[in-house]
Each structure stands twice: as structure tokens, then as C-alpha cells.
Length: 158
Image: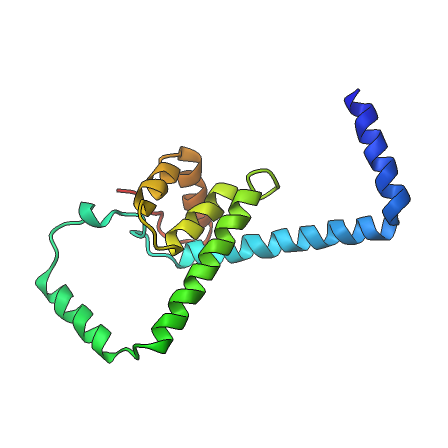
């Protein structure tokens, strides 16, 4: 029954779209998958190894950190530049989140993409969702596998 269903779908596609369209579609999706994997790998390798360590799990803050942060904030061009960067970060986070959800049923690293998208978005409960995703051994091992292949230190997860 299932083989008959697939045979009907294949016949419909070949009759309505042709060989060139199917070849172009396969070529396009393969190229997009490769480019996507390269981009995600680059993002993961550029992250700090302590990126996923919770702020409350870190040791006592150094009083000099507050002074350094205030100095950095005062020297940065505030205003429109920060606003544009925050909007771009949110748009990128939403796009990665949507693509990650799609990749749960399509080929790709859905959970990794969702995790990166969530880390870019500011919303209440973000740390709980990230912690839930990072509790999966497959997510942790995939993140560290990409970093090890790039000769970077593995992530520290709490």
C-alpha cells in the first residue's frame, strides 16, 4: 500500500514538473544545506566556551567588571546603532527558531538551530528552555563535535 502511494506521487511529480525541475530542486536544497551547515558551524566555533554557563552559576563577580562594563557602555555609540543591532539580532533569532522548527521534520540540525535562535532572543523563560535543550546528550555532543573538528575547546555546560 505504501509503495503504491509513493509510486503515485513519483508519477505525479514526473508528469507535472519534469526531470530538469526535480534536478534543480535537489541541487538547490543540497547547496542550501551545505551552506547552512557551514554557517552554523562558524557560529558555534566563534562562541565562547562558557557561553551556556548560567550567570548565577558563575563565581562571585569581580568589582572591576562593573567598572569595565560601565566604561565600555559609555564609550560605545549608543542610540540608533544599538537599536539596529538589537533588532537585527531578534530578527535573526526568530528566523533561526522558525528554521529549526521546520528542521525537526525536514533534514537538518533542528535542535541545534532552535538553541542558537533561542540564545539570540530576549524573553522570559529563555534560560529554562535553553537548559531543557542542553539537557539532551545528543545536543551537547553535536555542539562539542563541531567545536572539536574546528580545533576549539568544547563547551562547558554548568
